[in-house]
Image 1 (cartoon, helix red, strand yellow):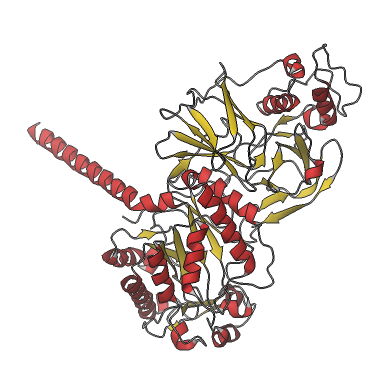
Image 2: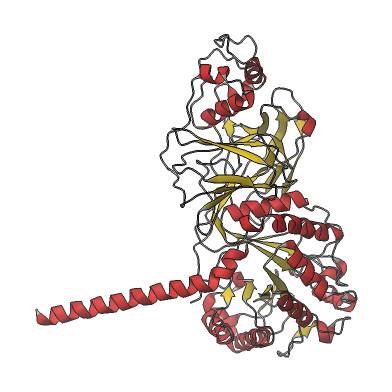
Length: 615
Protein backbone atom coordinates (compact mmCIF):
# COMPACT_ATOMS: atom_id res chain seq x y z
CA UNK A 1 0.00 0.00 0.00
CA UNK A 2 2.79 2.38 1.06
CA UNK A 3 4.79 1.40 -2.01
CA UNK A 4 1.82 2.13 -4.28
CA UNK A 5 1.29 5.52 -2.61
CA UNK A 6 4.95 6.49 -3.06
CA UNK A 7 4.79 5.38 -6.71
CA UNK A 8 1.62 7.40 -7.28
CA UNK A 9 3.17 10.52 -5.71
CA UNK A 10 6.32 10.09 -7.82
CA UNK A 11 4.34 9.70 -11.04
CA UNK A 12 2.26 12.73 -10.09
CA UNK A 13 5.36 14.84 -9.56
CA UNK A 14 6.84 13.56 -12.83
CA UNK A 15 3.64 14.44 -14.71
CA UNK A 16 3.53 17.90 -13.09
CA UNK A 17 7.17 18.53 -14.01
CA UNK A 18 6.48 17.45 -17.60
CA UNK A 19 3.41 19.71 -17.78
CA UNK A 20 5.30 22.70 -16.38
CA UNK A 21 8.18 22.06 -18.82
CA UNK A 22 5.75 21.89 -21.75
CA UNK A 23 4.07 25.13 -20.64
CA UNK A 24 7.44 26.87 -20.35
CA UNK A 25 8.43 25.70 -23.84
CA UNK A 26 5.10 26.95 -25.24
CA UNK A 27 5.61 30.31 -23.52
CA UNK A 28 9.19 30.54 -24.85
CA UNK A 29 7.98 29.71 -28.35
CA UNK A 30 5.22 32.36 -28.15
CA UNK A 31 7.78 34.94 -27.09
CA UNK A 32 10.22 34.21 -29.92
CA UNK A 33 7.37 34.10 -32.45
CA UNK A 34 5.93 37.44 -31.36
CA UNK A 35 7.74 39.60 -33.94
CA UNK A 36 6.85 37.15 -36.71
CA UNK A 37 3.14 37.01 -35.82
CA UNK A 38 2.95 40.80 -35.64
CA UNK A 39 4.86 41.42 -38.89
CA UNK A 40 2.03 40.51 -41.34
CA UNK A 41 4.09 41.31 -44.45
CA UNK A 42 7.44 39.99 -45.62
CA UNK A 43 9.18 40.10 -49.01
CA UNK A 44 10.58 36.94 -50.63
CA UNK A 45 13.48 37.40 -53.08
CA UNK A 46 14.33 34.75 -55.66
CA UNK A 47 17.62 35.82 -57.21
CA UNK A 48 20.01 33.51 -58.98
CA UNK A 49 21.53 32.53 -62.31
CA UNK A 50 18.09 31.46 -63.61
CA UNK A 51 17.36 35.19 -64.11
CA UNK A 52 19.94 35.34 -66.92
CA UNK A 53 17.85 33.41 -69.45
CA UNK A 54 14.61 33.96 -67.53
CA UNK A 55 13.85 30.26 -66.99
CA UNK A 56 12.46 28.32 -64.05
CA UNK A 57 14.82 28.26 -61.11
CA UNK A 58 16.47 24.80 -60.90
CA UNK A 59 13.32 22.99 -62.07
CA UNK A 60 14.07 23.72 -65.73
CA UNK A 61 16.99 21.27 -65.72
CA UNK A 62 15.50 18.92 -63.11
CA UNK A 63 12.47 18.42 -65.40
CA UNK A 64 14.78 18.06 -68.43
CA UNK A 65 13.50 21.21 -70.17
CA UNK A 66 17.18 22.14 -70.56
CA UNK A 67 20.21 20.02 -69.79
CA UNK A 68 22.30 20.74 -66.70
CA UNK A 69 25.34 21.90 -68.64
CA UNK A 70 23.41 24.54 -70.56
CA UNK A 71 21.58 25.63 -67.41
CA UNK A 72 24.86 26.22 -65.58
CA UNK A 73 26.21 28.32 -68.48
CA UNK A 74 24.03 31.08 -67.06
CA UNK A 75 26.82 31.64 -64.52
CA UNK A 76 28.63 33.42 -67.37
CA UNK A 77 25.79 35.95 -67.72
CA UNK A 78 25.06 36.72 -64.07
CA UNK A 79 26.65 40.16 -63.73
CA UNK A 80 24.87 41.94 -60.84
CA UNK A 81 26.29 45.03 -62.61
CA UNK A 82 23.46 47.36 -61.51
CA UNK A 83 22.85 45.75 -58.13
CA UNK A 84 21.99 48.29 -55.42
CA UNK A 85 21.23 46.39 -52.20
CA UNK A 86 20.43 49.59 -50.25
CA UNK A 87 17.78 50.42 -52.86
CA UNK A 88 16.25 46.95 -52.46
CA UNK A 89 16.15 47.30 -48.68
CA UNK A 90 14.66 50.80 -48.96
CA UNK A 91 11.90 49.62 -51.31
CA UNK A 92 11.12 46.62 -49.10
CA UNK A 93 10.86 48.88 -46.06
CA UNK A 94 8.70 51.34 -48.02
CA UNK A 95 6.30 48.50 -48.91
CA UNK A 96 5.50 48.07 -45.22
CA UNK A 97 7.23 44.70 -44.91
CA UNK A 98 8.87 43.88 -41.59
CA UNK A 99 11.21 41.16 -42.87
CA UNK A 100 12.74 39.79 -46.05
CA UNK A 101 13.75 36.26 -47.07
CA UNK A 102 16.37 35.88 -49.82
CA UNK A 103 17.39 32.70 -51.66
CA UNK A 104 20.95 32.11 -50.50
CA UNK A 105 21.03 28.86 -52.50
CA UNK A 106 18.27 27.25 -54.59
CA UNK A 107 18.09 23.57 -55.64
CA UNK A 108 20.66 24.27 -58.38
CA UNK A 109 23.29 24.59 -55.65
CA UNK A 110 24.59 28.04 -56.68
CA UNK A 111 25.41 30.00 -53.50
CA UNK A 112 25.10 33.79 -53.44
CA UNK A 113 27.82 34.04 -50.78
CA UNK A 114 31.45 32.96 -50.90
CA UNK A 115 30.91 29.50 -49.44
CA UNK A 116 34.04 27.57 -48.50
CA UNK A 117 32.18 24.26 -48.27
CA UNK A 118 33.71 21.42 -50.28
CA UNK A 119 32.96 21.60 -54.03
CA UNK A 120 30.57 24.57 -53.57
CA UNK A 121 29.54 26.58 -56.65
CA UNK A 122 29.32 30.28 -55.79
CA UNK A 123 28.52 33.61 -57.38
CA UNK A 124 31.78 35.24 -56.17
CA UNK A 125 33.99 32.41 -57.49
CA UNK A 126 32.13 31.03 -60.49
CA UNK A 127 29.96 33.76 -62.07
CA UNK A 128 30.54 36.81 -64.25
CA UNK A 129 29.79 39.01 -61.21
CA UNK A 130 32.92 37.83 -59.36
CA UNK A 131 31.71 39.51 -56.19
CA UNK A 132 29.87 38.81 -52.96
CA UNK A 133 26.18 39.69 -53.37
CA UNK A 134 24.53 38.31 -50.22
CA UNK A 135 26.55 40.22 -47.61
CA UNK A 136 25.74 43.76 -48.84
CA UNK A 137 22.01 42.97 -48.92
CA UNK A 138 21.96 41.51 -45.40
CA UNK A 139 23.92 44.53 -44.19
CA UNK A 140 21.39 46.88 -45.82
CA UNK A 141 18.50 44.91 -44.30
CA UNK A 142 19.90 45.11 -40.80
CA UNK A 143 20.65 48.84 -41.16
CA UNK A 144 17.04 49.44 -42.18
CA UNK A 145 15.72 47.65 -39.09
CA UNK A 146 14.16 44.77 -41.04
CA UNK A 147 14.40 41.18 -39.85
CA UNK A 148 16.68 38.90 -41.88
CA UNK A 149 15.37 35.67 -43.38
CA UNK A 150 17.56 33.27 -45.36
CA UNK A 151 16.10 30.73 -47.78
CA UNK A 152 18.19 27.56 -48.02
CA UNK A 153 17.58 24.56 -50.26
CA UNK A 154 18.27 21.22 -48.62
CA UNK A 155 18.64 19.43 -51.98
CA UNK A 156 21.59 20.39 -54.18
CA UNK A 157 21.01 18.85 -57.60
CA UNK A 158 24.44 20.00 -58.84
CA UNK A 159 26.59 18.71 -56.01
CA UNK A 160 28.48 15.43 -56.62
CA UNK A 161 27.75 14.20 -53.09
CA UNK A 162 23.97 14.60 -53.47
CA UNK A 163 22.05 11.52 -54.61
CA UNK A 164 19.47 13.14 -56.95
CA UNK A 165 20.43 14.92 -60.17
CA UNK A 166 17.24 15.24 -62.27
CA UNK A 167 13.78 13.74 -62.33
CA UNK A 168 15.14 10.83 -64.37
CA UNK A 169 18.71 10.55 -63.05
CA UNK A 170 20.17 9.59 -59.69
CA UNK A 171 23.86 9.52 -58.84
CA UNK A 172 23.59 6.72 -56.30
CA UNK A 173 21.39 5.04 -53.68
CA UNK A 174 22.07 6.16 -50.09
CA UNK A 175 21.78 2.62 -48.74
CA UNK A 176 24.57 1.55 -51.11
CA UNK A 177 26.88 4.46 -50.34
CA UNK A 178 26.08 5.90 -46.88
CA UNK A 179 29.56 7.43 -46.60
CA UNK A 180 28.97 9.59 -49.67
CA UNK A 181 25.64 10.75 -48.21
CA UNK A 182 27.36 11.69 -44.97
CA UNK A 183 29.77 13.80 -47.01
CA UNK A 184 26.73 15.68 -48.34
CA UNK A 185 25.30 16.19 -44.83
CA UNK A 186 28.66 17.67 -43.79
CA UNK A 187 28.61 19.89 -46.90
CA UNK A 188 25.16 21.38 -46.34
CA UNK A 189 25.65 21.76 -42.58
CA UNK A 190 28.96 23.54 -43.25
CA UNK A 191 27.04 26.00 -45.42
CA UNK A 192 24.46 26.55 -42.66
CA UNK A 193 27.31 27.17 -40.22
CA UNK A 194 28.69 29.79 -42.61
CA UNK A 195 25.32 31.51 -43.03
CA UNK A 196 24.64 31.49 -39.28
CA UNK A 197 28.05 32.81 -38.24
CA UNK A 198 28.32 35.45 -40.98
CA UNK A 199 24.75 36.78 -41.14
CA UNK A 200 23.00 36.04 -37.81
CA UNK A 201 19.61 35.39 -39.44
CA UNK A 202 16.35 35.80 -37.53
CA UNK A 203 14.63 33.20 -39.70
CA UNK A 204 15.71 30.17 -41.75
CA UNK A 205 13.41 29.27 -44.65
CA UNK A 206 14.10 25.67 -45.71
CA UNK A 207 12.88 24.10 -48.94
CA UNK A 208 13.04 20.70 -50.62
CA UNK A 209 12.60 18.47 -47.58
CA UNK A 210 10.31 16.13 -49.53
CA UNK A 211 13.27 14.30 -51.12
CA UNK A 212 14.40 12.66 -47.88
CA UNK A 213 13.28 11.74 -44.39
CA UNK A 214 14.03 13.74 -41.27
CA UNK A 215 16.46 11.03 -40.24
CA UNK A 216 18.30 11.15 -43.58
CA UNK A 217 18.55 14.95 -43.44
CA UNK A 218 19.80 14.72 -39.83
CA UNK A 219 17.20 17.38 -39.10
CA UNK A 220 17.47 17.37 -35.27
CA UNK A 221 21.23 17.78 -35.59
CA UNK A 222 20.72 20.66 -38.04
CA UNK A 223 18.33 22.41 -35.66
CA UNK A 224 20.80 22.06 -32.80
CA UNK A 225 23.45 23.59 -35.04
CA UNK A 226 21.27 26.61 -35.85
CA UNK A 227 20.18 27.17 -32.24
CA UNK A 228 23.83 27.18 -31.17
CA UNK A 229 24.13 30.49 -33.03
CA UNK A 230 20.63 31.82 -32.25
CA UNK A 231 18.48 30.06 -29.62
CA UNK A 232 15.47 32.06 -30.91
CA UNK A 233 15.95 31.19 -34.59
CA UNK A 234 12.59 30.77 -36.35
CA UNK A 235 12.28 27.85 -38.77
CA UNK A 236 9.57 27.31 -41.37
CA UNK A 237 7.77 23.96 -41.61
CA UNK A 238 9.87 22.52 -44.45
CA UNK A 239 12.37 20.49 -42.49
CA UNK A 240 10.47 17.22 -42.20
CA UNK A 241 8.51 17.41 -38.94
CA UNK A 242 10.53 20.28 -37.51
CA UNK A 243 9.50 23.91 -37.72
CA UNK A 244 7.65 26.79 -36.08
CA UNK A 245 5.08 27.81 -38.67
CA UNK A 246 3.18 26.58 -41.73
CA UNK A 247 3.93 27.77 -45.26
CA UNK A 248 1.01 27.37 -47.69
CA UNK A 249 2.25 28.15 -51.19
CA UNK A 250 0.50 30.28 -53.83
CA UNK A 251 -3.09 29.33 -52.93
CA UNK A 252 -4.69 31.82 -50.53
CA UNK A 253 -6.27 29.62 -47.83
CA UNK A 254 -10.04 29.24 -47.99
CA UNK A 255 -10.32 28.31 -44.33
CA UNK A 256 -8.18 30.15 -41.81
CA UNK A 257 -5.45 27.74 -40.66
CA UNK A 258 -5.80 26.58 -37.06
CA UNK A 259 -2.12 27.22 -36.38
CA UNK A 260 -1.36 30.51 -34.63
CA UNK A 261 1.63 31.01 -36.96
CA UNK A 262 1.47 30.71 -40.74
CA UNK A 263 2.70 32.49 -43.85
CA UNK A 264 1.44 32.47 -47.43
CA UNK A 265 4.33 32.57 -49.91
CA UNK A 266 2.96 34.19 -53.05
CA UNK A 267 4.22 35.39 -56.43
CA UNK A 268 3.35 38.69 -58.13
CA UNK A 269 2.96 36.91 -61.47
CA UNK A 270 3.28 33.16 -62.13
CA UNK A 271 7.04 32.92 -61.51
CA UNK A 272 9.34 33.04 -58.52
CA UNK A 273 12.49 34.16 -60.33
CA UNK A 274 12.62 36.81 -63.07
CA UNK A 275 11.04 35.66 -66.33
CA UNK A 276 10.73 38.44 -68.94
CA UNK A 277 7.82 36.88 -70.81
CA UNK A 278 5.67 36.22 -67.76
CA UNK A 279 3.35 39.23 -67.85
CA UNK A 280 0.58 37.59 -65.81
CA UNK A 281 1.02 40.05 -62.96
CA UNK A 282 -1.71 40.49 -60.40
CA UNK A 283 -2.69 44.13 -60.19
CA UNK A 284 -1.59 46.25 -57.24
CA UNK A 285 -5.26 46.18 -56.16
CA UNK A 286 -5.30 42.37 -56.06
CA UNK A 287 -2.13 42.27 -53.97
CA UNK A 288 -3.46 44.72 -51.35
CA UNK A 289 -6.70 42.71 -51.14
CA UNK A 290 -4.69 39.51 -50.75
CA UNK A 291 -2.81 41.07 -47.84
CA UNK A 292 -6.14 42.08 -46.23
CA UNK A 293 -7.40 38.51 -46.73
CA UNK A 294 -4.33 37.03 -45.04
CA UNK A 295 -4.46 39.53 -42.17
CA UNK A 296 -8.12 38.68 -41.56
CA UNK A 297 -7.12 35.01 -41.14
CA UNK A 298 -4.28 35.85 -38.74
CA UNK A 299 -1.38 35.04 -41.07
CA UNK A 300 1.53 36.69 -42.87
CA UNK A 301 1.96 37.37 -46.58
CA UNK A 302 5.45 36.62 -47.96
CA UNK A 303 5.27 38.35 -51.33
CA UNK A 304 7.91 37.39 -53.88
CA UNK A 305 9.98 39.59 -56.12
CA UNK A 306 12.38 38.35 -58.80
CA UNK A 307 15.25 40.72 -59.70
CA UNK A 308 16.93 40.63 -63.10
CA UNK A 309 20.44 39.20 -63.43
CA UNK A 310 21.96 42.69 -63.38
CA UNK A 311 20.24 43.42 -60.06
CA UNK A 312 17.51 45.77 -61.31
CA UNK A 313 13.83 45.18 -60.59
CA UNK A 314 11.00 44.96 -63.16
CA UNK A 315 8.79 48.06 -63.20
CA UNK A 316 5.66 46.01 -62.49
CA UNK A 317 7.20 44.74 -59.24
CA UNK A 318 8.25 48.21 -58.15
CA UNK A 319 4.71 49.50 -58.79
CA UNK A 320 3.18 46.71 -56.68
CA UNK A 321 5.59 47.31 -53.79
CA UNK A 322 5.08 51.08 -53.84
CA UNK A 323 1.30 50.71 -53.83
CA UNK A 324 1.57 48.30 -50.92
CA UNK A 325 3.57 51.00 -49.14
CA UNK A 326 0.86 53.56 -49.86
CA UNK A 327 -1.78 51.31 -48.25
CA UNK A 328 0.28 49.99 -45.33
CA UNK A 329 1.50 53.46 -44.30
CA UNK A 330 -2.10 54.68 -44.25
CA UNK A 331 -3.46 51.70 -42.29
CA UNK A 332 -0.59 50.68 -39.95
CA UNK A 333 -2.88 50.46 -36.94
CA UNK A 334 -5.09 47.90 -38.74
CA UNK A 335 -2.25 45.73 -40.07
CA UNK A 336 0.53 45.09 -37.58
CA UNK A 337 -0.13 43.48 -34.21
CA UNK A 338 -3.57 42.29 -35.24
CA UNK A 339 -5.26 38.91 -34.85
CA UNK A 340 -7.80 37.06 -36.98
CA UNK A 341 -11.25 38.60 -37.21
CA UNK A 342 -14.85 37.61 -36.53
CA UNK A 343 -16.66 34.62 -38.05
CA UNK A 344 -18.29 34.91 -41.48
CA UNK A 345 -21.69 34.29 -39.87
CA UNK A 346 -21.28 37.56 -37.96
CA UNK A 347 -19.85 39.61 -40.81
CA UNK A 348 -19.85 38.86 -44.54
CA UNK A 349 -16.42 40.28 -45.19
CA UNK A 350 -12.83 40.51 -43.96
CA UNK A 351 -11.94 41.72 -40.47
CA UNK A 352 -9.31 41.62 -37.73
CA UNK A 353 -8.84 42.61 -34.08
CA UNK A 354 -6.18 44.64 -32.33
CA UNK A 355 -4.19 42.68 -29.74
CA UNK A 356 -6.29 44.23 -26.95
CA UNK A 357 -9.45 43.11 -28.79
CA UNK A 358 -10.86 46.59 -28.15
CA UNK A 359 -10.59 47.61 -31.81
CA UNK A 360 -12.30 45.72 -34.63
CA UNK A 361 -11.18 46.46 -38.19
CA UNK A 362 -13.39 45.88 -41.24
CA UNK A 363 -11.73 45.73 -44.66
CA UNK A 364 -14.09 47.06 -47.34
CA UNK A 365 -13.29 46.13 -50.94
CA UNK A 366 -16.00 48.33 -52.37
CA UNK A 367 -17.54 51.76 -51.96
CA UNK A 368 -20.85 51.15 -50.20
CA UNK A 369 -23.48 53.00 -48.20
CA UNK A 370 -23.75 50.59 -45.24
CA UNK A 371 -22.45 47.39 -43.62
CA UNK A 372 -24.05 45.00 -41.14
CA UNK A 373 -22.56 42.97 -38.29
CA UNK A 374 -24.72 40.26 -36.72
CA UNK A 375 -24.78 38.86 -33.19
CA UNK A 376 -22.90 41.77 -31.61
CA UNK A 377 -23.73 41.85 -27.90
CA UNK A 378 -21.52 44.88 -27.09
CA UNK A 379 -22.27 48.49 -27.98
CA UNK A 380 -19.34 50.15 -29.81
CA UNK A 381 -18.01 53.42 -28.44
CA UNK A 382 -17.20 54.86 -31.87
CA UNK A 383 -16.42 54.11 -35.50
CA UNK A 384 -14.17 55.82 -38.02
CA UNK A 385 -12.64 55.39 -41.46
CA UNK A 386 -8.86 55.15 -41.03
CA UNK A 387 -7.16 57.92 -42.95
CA UNK A 388 -10.36 59.90 -43.57
CA UNK A 389 -11.20 62.22 -40.64
CA UNK A 390 -14.08 63.85 -42.55
CA UNK A 391 -16.01 60.59 -43.00
CA UNK A 392 -19.25 60.20 -41.06
CA UNK A 393 -20.46 56.84 -39.71
CA UNK A 394 -23.71 56.37 -37.80
CA UNK A 395 -24.20 53.24 -35.69
CA UNK A 396 -27.47 51.47 -35.01
CA UNK A 397 -27.48 48.36 -32.77
CA UNK A 398 -30.98 46.89 -32.69
CA UNK A 399 -32.68 44.49 -30.27
CA UNK A 400 -31.67 41.50 -32.44
CA UNK A 401 -27.99 42.45 -31.88
CA UNK A 402 -27.53 43.52 -35.50
CA UNK A 403 -25.27 46.52 -35.93
CA UNK A 404 -25.79 48.68 -39.01
CA UNK A 405 -23.03 51.08 -40.00
CA UNK A 406 -24.17 53.82 -42.36
CA UNK A 407 -21.45 55.61 -44.31
CA UNK A 408 -21.61 59.13 -45.68
CA UNK A 409 -19.03 61.57 -47.03
CA UNK A 410 -16.46 58.75 -47.18
CA UNK A 411 -13.38 58.90 -49.39
CA UNK A 412 -13.12 55.21 -50.17
CA UNK A 413 -9.62 53.85 -50.72
CA UNK A 414 -8.86 52.73 -54.27
CA UNK A 415 -8.02 49.24 -52.95
CA UNK A 416 -9.30 48.54 -49.42
CA UNK A 417 -11.01 50.97 -47.04
CA UNK A 418 -10.59 50.19 -43.34
CA UNK A 419 -13.31 50.87 -40.76
CA UNK A 420 -12.23 50.88 -37.12
CA UNK A 421 -14.81 50.11 -34.43
CA UNK A 422 -13.72 50.92 -30.88
CA UNK A 423 -15.03 49.26 -27.71
CA UNK A 424 -14.61 49.91 -24.00
CA UNK A 425 -14.07 46.18 -23.40
CA UNK A 426 -13.43 43.30 -25.83
CA UNK A 427 -16.74 42.83 -27.69
CA UNK A 428 -18.86 39.71 -27.32
CA UNK A 429 -20.08 38.05 -30.52
CA UNK A 430 -22.92 35.58 -30.19
CA UNK A 431 -22.72 32.24 -31.96
CA UNK A 432 -26.42 31.42 -31.70
CA UNK A 433 -27.80 34.85 -32.43
CA UNK A 434 -31.23 35.67 -33.75
CA UNK A 435 -30.96 36.21 -37.46
CA UNK A 436 -32.36 39.45 -38.76
CA UNK A 437 -35.89 38.64 -39.90
CA UNK A 438 -38.42 40.75 -41.71
CA UNK A 439 -41.67 39.95 -43.38
CA UNK A 440 -41.80 40.42 -47.13
CA UNK A 441 -44.27 43.27 -46.70
CA UNK A 442 -41.86 45.05 -44.31
CA UNK A 443 -39.05 44.75 -46.83
CA UNK A 444 -41.22 45.94 -49.71
CA UNK A 445 -42.33 48.95 -47.66
CA UNK A 446 -38.74 49.98 -46.84
CA UNK A 447 -38.07 53.33 -48.50
CA UNK A 448 -34.41 52.39 -48.89
CA UNK A 449 -34.35 49.94 -51.80
CA UNK A 450 -30.64 49.15 -51.23
CA UNK A 451 -31.39 47.95 -47.71
CA UNK A 452 -34.41 46.02 -49.00
CA UNK A 453 -32.33 44.19 -51.64
CA UNK A 454 -29.67 43.40 -49.03
CA UNK A 455 -32.28 42.04 -46.58
CA UNK A 456 -33.75 39.76 -49.25
CA UNK A 457 -30.32 38.39 -50.14
CA UNK A 458 -29.20 38.05 -46.53
CA UNK A 459 -32.31 36.16 -45.44
CA UNK A 460 -32.12 33.94 -48.50
CA UNK A 461 -28.48 33.13 -47.69
CA UNK A 462 -29.57 32.14 -44.18
CA UNK A 463 -32.03 29.64 -45.64
CA UNK A 464 -35.13 31.81 -45.45
CA UNK A 465 -36.36 32.53 -48.97
CA UNK A 466 -39.17 35.02 -48.44
CA UNK A 467 -40.07 34.91 -52.10
CA UNK A 468 -41.08 31.24 -52.17
CA UNK A 469 -44.85 31.07 -52.72
CA UNK A 470 -44.96 34.88 -52.80
CA UNK A 471 -46.12 35.20 -56.37
CA UNK A 472 -42.58 35.55 -57.79
CA UNK A 473 -42.13 33.93 -61.19
CA UNK A 474 -38.93 32.39 -62.52
CA UNK A 475 -38.44 35.15 -65.13
CA UNK A 476 -39.80 38.03 -63.03
CA UNK A 477 -42.71 38.61 -65.39
CA UNK A 478 -46.40 38.54 -64.40
CA UNK A 479 -45.48 38.52 -60.71
CA UNK A 480 -48.37 38.22 -58.25
CA UNK A 481 -46.48 39.63 -55.25
CA UNK A 482 -48.91 41.38 -52.90
CA UNK A 483 -48.51 45.17 -52.83
CA UNK A 484 -49.62 47.93 -50.51
CA UNK A 485 -49.72 51.71 -50.97
CA UNK A 486 -46.31 51.82 -49.21
CA UNK A 487 -44.63 49.28 -51.51
CA UNK A 488 -41.39 50.67 -52.91
CA UNK A 489 -41.54 50.27 -56.72
CA UNK A 490 -37.71 50.27 -56.97
CA UNK A 491 -37.56 47.17 -54.76
CA UNK A 492 -40.19 45.41 -56.88
CA UNK A 493 -38.24 46.27 -60.02
CA UNK A 494 -35.05 44.87 -58.45
CA UNK A 495 -36.85 41.63 -57.53
CA UNK A 496 -38.26 41.29 -61.04
CA UNK A 497 -34.88 41.94 -62.67
CA UNK A 498 -33.08 39.43 -60.43
CA UNK A 499 -35.82 36.80 -60.22
CA UNK A 500 -33.47 34.13 -61.58
CA UNK A 501 -31.22 34.43 -58.51
CA UNK A 502 -34.17 34.53 -56.08
CA UNK A 503 -36.66 31.99 -57.42
CA UNK A 504 -36.33 28.67 -55.55
CA UNK A 505 -32.61 29.23 -54.99
CA UNK A 506 -30.73 27.89 -51.98
CA UNK A 507 -28.06 29.06 -49.56
CA UNK A 508 -24.78 29.71 -51.38
CA UNK A 509 -21.10 29.46 -50.46
CA UNK A 510 -19.88 28.79 -46.91
CA UNK A 511 -17.24 31.00 -45.30
CA UNK A 512 -13.97 31.65 -47.09
CA UNK A 513 -14.95 31.32 -50.73
CA UNK A 514 -16.56 34.73 -51.32
CA UNK A 515 -16.71 37.72 -48.95
CA UNK A 516 -20.39 38.40 -49.46
CA UNK A 517 -23.87 36.97 -49.98
CA UNK A 518 -24.36 34.17 -52.49
CA UNK A 519 -27.07 31.72 -53.54
CA UNK A 520 -27.13 28.50 -55.53
CA UNK A 521 -29.57 27.29 -58.16
CA UNK A 522 -31.72 24.23 -57.48
CA UNK A 523 -29.54 22.05 -59.74
CA UNK A 524 -26.44 23.42 -57.93
CA UNK A 525 -24.80 24.35 -61.21
CA UNK A 526 -25.26 28.12 -61.18
CA UNK A 527 -23.73 30.22 -58.45
CA UNK A 528 -25.15 33.70 -57.84
CA UNK A 529 -22.87 36.32 -56.27
CA UNK A 530 -24.47 39.42 -54.73
CA UNK A 531 -22.12 42.38 -55.21
CA UNK A 532 -22.54 45.34 -52.87
CA UNK A 533 -21.74 48.87 -53.93
CA UNK A 534 -18.88 49.63 -56.32
CA UNK A 535 -16.01 47.12 -56.11
CA UNK A 536 -12.49 48.54 -56.21
CA UNK A 537 -11.35 45.71 -58.47
CA UNK A 538 -12.48 42.36 -59.85
CA UNK A 539 -14.71 40.12 -57.74
CA UNK A 540 -12.67 37.24 -56.24
CA UNK A 541 -13.69 33.59 -55.77
CA UNK A 542 -11.60 30.97 -53.96
CA UNK A 543 -11.79 27.20 -53.72
CA UNK A 544 -14.08 26.45 -56.69
CA UNK A 545 -13.05 23.05 -58.09
CA UNK A 546 -15.40 23.27 -61.09
CA UNK A 547 -14.63 24.55 -64.52
CA UNK A 548 -16.44 27.79 -65.37
CA UNK A 549 -18.60 27.72 -68.50
CA UNK A 550 -19.59 31.39 -68.53
CA UNK A 551 -20.28 34.36 -66.26
CA UNK A 552 -22.92 37.02 -66.84
CA UNK A 553 -24.80 39.81 -65.11
CA UNK A 554 -28.20 38.64 -63.94
CA UNK A 555 -31.22 40.40 -65.43
CA UNK A 556 -29.47 42.04 -68.35
CA UNK A 557 -27.25 39.36 -69.84
CA UNK A 558 -23.84 41.05 -70.21
CA UNK A 559 -21.13 38.41 -70.43
CA UNK A 560 -18.18 38.94 -68.11
CA UNK A 561 -14.54 37.93 -68.50
CA UNK A 562 -12.56 36.18 -65.79
CA UNK A 563 -8.98 35.10 -65.12
CA UNK A 564 -7.67 32.32 -62.93
CA UNK A 565 -4.43 32.91 -61.03
CA UNK A 566 -2.17 30.50 -59.16
CA UNK A 567 -3.57 27.25 -60.51
CA UNK A 568 -0.64 24.89 -60.00
CA UNK A 569 -0.42 21.79 -62.17
CA UNK A 570 1.06 19.77 -59.31
CA UNK A 571 -1.63 20.66 -56.76
CA UNK A 572 -5.34 19.91 -56.53
CA UNK A 573 -5.90 23.34 -54.99
CA UNK A 574 -7.99 25.49 -57.38
CA UNK A 575 -6.66 28.84 -58.49
CA UNK A 576 -8.30 32.10 -57.48
CA UNK A 577 -10.94 33.38 -59.92
CA UNK A 578 -11.09 37.12 -60.61
CA UNK A 579 -14.20 38.45 -62.37
CA UNK A 580 -14.26 41.91 -63.94
CA UNK A 581 -17.51 43.90 -63.73
CA UNK A 582 -17.72 47.12 -65.80
CA UNK A 583 -18.73 49.98 -63.49
CA UNK A 584 -21.42 51.13 -65.93
CA UNK A 585 -23.14 47.73 -65.56
CA UNK A 586 -23.49 47.87 -61.76
CA UNK A 587 -27.02 47.90 -60.34
CA UNK A 588 -27.63 50.82 -57.96
CA UNK A 589 -29.42 48.56 -55.45
CA UNK A 590 -27.26 45.45 -55.61
CA UNK A 591 -25.62 43.73 -58.59
CA UNK A 592 -25.94 39.96 -58.99
CA UNK A 593 -23.69 37.91 -61.25
CA UNK A 594 -24.34 34.32 -62.36
CA UNK A 595 -21.43 31.89 -62.56
CA UNK A 596 -22.40 28.86 -64.68
CA UNK A 597 -20.35 25.81 -63.71
CA UNK A 598 -19.55 22.77 -65.83
CA UNK A 599 -21.17 20.48 -63.25
CA UNK A 600 -22.79 20.76 -59.79
CA UNK A 601 -20.76 22.87 -57.39
CA UNK A 602 -17.66 21.23 -55.85
CA UNK A 603 -15.68 23.06 -53.20
CA UNK A 604 -12.09 22.79 -52.06
CA UNK A 605 -11.93 23.34 -48.30
CA UNK A 606 -8.44 22.47 -47.18
CA UNK A 607 -7.04 22.07 -43.70
CA UNK A 608 -3.45 23.27 -43.47
CA UNK A 609 -1.27 20.74 -41.63
CA UNK A 610 -0.65 20.70 -37.90
CA UNK A 611 1.91 23.12 -36.55
CA UNK A 612 5.43 21.86 -36.04
CA UNK A 613 7.75 23.14 -33.34
CA UNK A 614 11.54 23.11 -33.31
CA UNK A 615 11.89 23.44 -29.53
